[in-house]
Image (cartoon, rainbow, N blue to C red; front, side, top):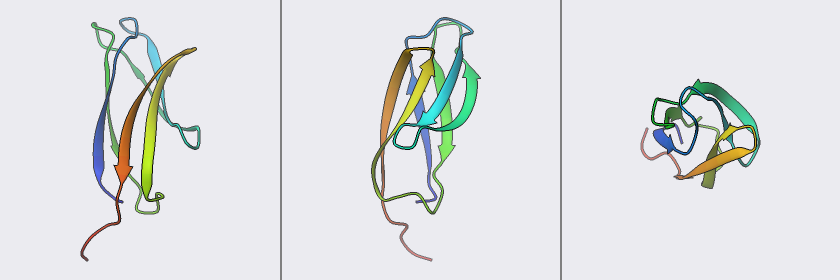
Length: 78
């Protein structure tokens, strides 16, 4: 909780608008453009209130979606 992750998504067309979501809640985080190779790199700061456990970030351009998994662990220390 409160950490930063970097997700990598591939398989899009160059310059295509890609919506980034938290898959478990369908919460839209951002819309970014794919690079010339059709890739998207997205950095996400996990809120301190985010549920502990396994989650997915999803990158979608229309019906074309890919996912990147991450695990939220309890925050340690102060």
